[in-house]
Each structure stands twice: as C-alpha cells, then as structure tokens.
Length: 131
Image (cartoon, rainbow, N blue to C red; front, side, top):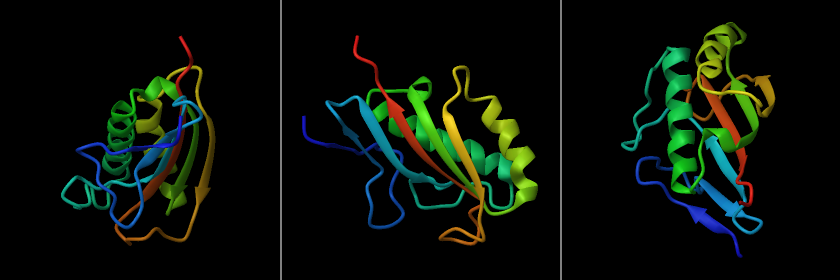
C-alpha cells in the first residue's frame, strides 16, 4: 500500500503541510505537529495551557479518527512547550486523555512556536494492529 494522506474535515493545516499519512500497509500513522487551531485558523485558548492542550488533543483525535484509529492507537508523542511553568497544566489535561499502556513520549521546553500565541505543539505516531 502506498502512503495515504489523512485529510480530516475539521482539522486544517495552518501552512503548506499535510496533517498526516498512513504508511506501512496502513498500520503506521504519522501526524504533523498539532497546535490549538480550529478549522477556521483561529487560535483556541490563547494564554490558557489547559484549553490549548485540550484543543491539540482534540485535533489529534479527529485526525486519527479520519485515519480509522483513535487515541488508544498512539504509540509515540513529542510535546513542545514554550514555558516550563505550563508543564503542570499540560499534564493535568493529558493525564485525563491517555490511558495505559501510555505512549513513549518526549517533552521539550522551547523558545517559541510558529505563532507567539501558541503554547504547545504535539507530534504523534500511532499504530493500528492487524486483526
């Protein structure tokens, strides 16, 4: 199976990139970094790490669903936060959305994202097991 682009109706790229691809026979799903933006290119939760984290995970969930997967299929996350002080608020939301076995994860504190109002960006890899 060649790579298959994932194009959810409710999650739109904010620049020239794809939201994600299914590869390796359709089992491996690689998503672009998701930010707290709605389908109208509006930032959701400006200044609020909890609201932004929730929107990012909503975008991840909707994109995974468009690929025939869900949150339980996530095997890897890379999280980018722009402020170390946002770590507890981010983790509070995240811990309510993920369950065991938890995905492998890396979290980095960085100096900024593409738009100054964005507080968090998350890259996701998911895997659909053969039935």
